[in-house]
Image (cartoon, rainbow, N blue to C red; front, side, top):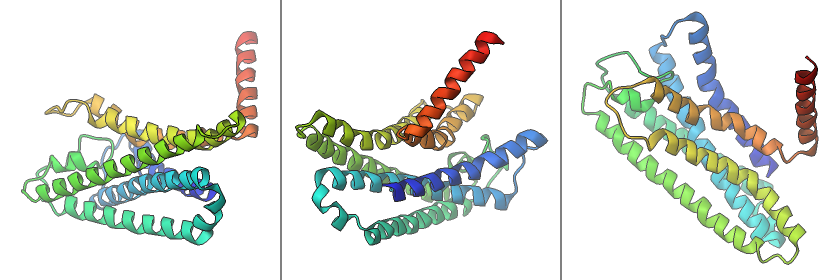
Length: 256
């Protein structure tokens, strides 16, 4: 579990590093331009880390399933070699995924160089296309959506089996212990799902607005930023430190 958590933390750091530093640089310098090569790199690495994030979350669901539903065989199934192999496959799939989307997007001829977003978003770039080649990338996006839905269905089915096993545990303490290893992962997955729905389930509009940028911030920055805090709340030392900080803040407000 901690091996997968390490990879998830590195992925979240990668997602933040792709978008946030450049956005801060634009804001501080009051320069909203980005080079063509920089835009290509931003699209590639954002979709690489984004797809890898979903892959690792799916693998972690399988890990929790084996740990709770087959505890006596866990060490045999989820051994070091198997974990490394799954992560390696995830990296290769994500690399292919990012390469396909980047190639499909920048094979287009663009009529304008004004992207109505705070980063190079494929959906916004396709709106600038002057050719019908953009339909190829649209097809890739549809296929990707189907794969993402498949991952979420796999996670849902896996956790339905996990919960069925947990509720058959006779000890209440045992149930709480099993659920405590699942809740952070479920919270992270739910945060990802709801942030994406929040961004993409809104009615489409013909023009971009500040609201579109706000939605983009929600699904690109907030989930990777909150993931470390969600998993850290299982650590007693971190919870104790946060509680002391909270109490210290209240005392400062009272006396000062």
